Amino acid sequence: MDGTLIFGGTGFLGAHVAAHCLAHSRRDATFARPLGSVVWAVGRDVSAVPRFGNPRDGVEFLIRDLEPEGAARVLLEELKPKRVLLLAALSRVRDCEERSELAERMNVDLPREVAKWCGQRGARLIHVSSDLVFGADLPPVDGFREEDMPAPVSRYGDTKARGEHGVLHAAPAALVVRLPLLYGDSGGRGLGASDSLLVAVDQGANPPLFTDEYRTPLEVSQVAAALVELLGRNDTGLLHLAGPERLTRHELGLVVLETHGLSPDEAAGSVRRALQGDLDTGGPRAGDTSLCGKRARGRLESPLDGPREALAKAHRSA
Ligand SMILES: NC(=O)c1ccc[n+]([C@@H]2O[C@H](COP(=O)([O-])OP(=O)(O)OC[C@H]3O[C@@H](n4cnc5c(N)ncnc54)[C@H](OP(=O)(O)O)[C@@H]3O)[C@@H](O)[C@H]2O)c1
Image (cartoon, rainbow, N blue to C red; front, side, top):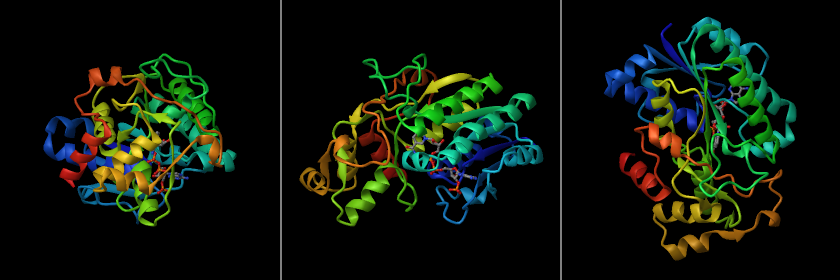
């Protein structure tokens, strides 16, 4: 059928992507055509998906476990989508260190399985990867570019790097989009860099934030809009989406708290400054995985703002 399938459409990013697919279909006929007549969102837990822009009105949510080998292929054969967005993953660094077999399955085998089908059937595939494919080396001044060699420090980064490779090998016309750290509204689920911080601060936990970990973060709904825009284009290979500002986790945390209404003093007093080496973080952490987002910025109409502007815009549209 002429539809779009979102693997991982129930997750932090996936719920926003589902909402943006519909928003674009309704607003702009030129988006309706590239997205087709139906949008399917796949995950295991549909009950908790937030209703950003009422995505449930138009997105068909499907409950499937993609862990068994062949499960994704069976679904693809059943639905025969023209466009596929692969967001499903074992997405937390600690989980990947603790569950290496599952990380291998979800982050390496599943992407290859999906890419093989898309490559054979000529379906448009966008696979989502991560800035954490870098980290062993320091980035160039403007951040890691698409040409730079992956060199991860964690099992998560390693499996994501091998997942990318498998996708581009099985489906050379696919697009692999590397994302930075994401923050923004998770619909009360405490997911992502900002909601998890707000929950911890609300509980009075005085959470530690690293002053020696640098990222180029983006707001989740802006990333969703950019991915939907890319679905309607024919870019292939690797593309970095990155925020315009290189920030430490501590700096990002302060911006999140201040845009949430805390004064600068209250924000600074609600968190602890920490160094990576101070804490057991469940696995090796990269110091600086800043991405260079110039290529994407030159191609996309979707805004990719710094955190103050992005959070203000998200607040206004809520
Ligand atoms: N969040 C970030 O800061 C960030 C940064 C860079 C890259 N990324 C990448 O972006 C993508 C989305 O990340 P996210 O933050 O949205 O992750 P998330 O909230 O953990 O969502 C993961 C998605 O994968 C699905 N999934 C996991 N295991 C599954 C299984 N066995 N069967 C079916 N579905 C399964 C989950 O479904 P259920 O929850 O319904 O089980 C969920 O929809 C991932 O590829 C991640 O590596 C994220």
